[in-house]
Length: 209
Picture 1 (cartoon, rainbow, N blue to C red):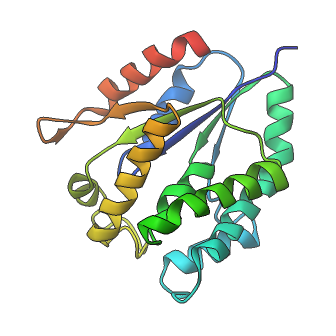
Picture 2 (picture 1 turned 180 degrees about the vertical axis):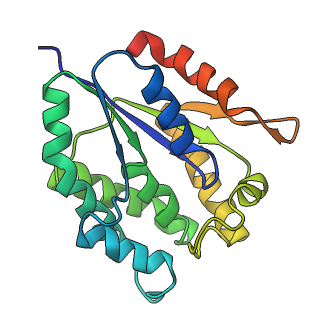
Picture 3 (picture 1 turned 30 degrees about the horizontal axis):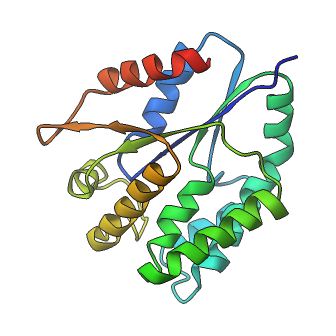
């Protein structure tokens, strides 16, 4: 049986990842599965990450936080591998690169390359989580992202525009260096419709599905 593919959706906060994952899942006719990270309510690692995002653990290093996100993915590893072995397409809302961008943005610029290399080694070599076959990056400028998430929740980083600008730039740098497919979700200063974005994504992915 042909091995499945792991397709990952990444993007800045408020870029519509969950919406586009749902729309793609509805369009894909071949066997597929959807998984979203962090898996809040599923395990202690994800809950520790939620505690951090709610501002209850502020004096903690990005590497320590990264271990919690990585622990959540490691616990999902066997399930993802089984789906891929069965020939299914696995669509993930966030994956390893979320930690690279969002936690890398907490560091000084000169520290990020070392952090990203360490994260790659820990996630892929040590924990041996499956590597993504394709990454779709949904880009929304930080100022518009913030408007999209007003009143959404208690995430302390979502409210910090300076942080969001840095995370957005880290994402853009990753997208360029790792040959992601970038979808520009804003046109003439306004969000494109979710249907229009979904059509573009599906057209791009069709040859891979």
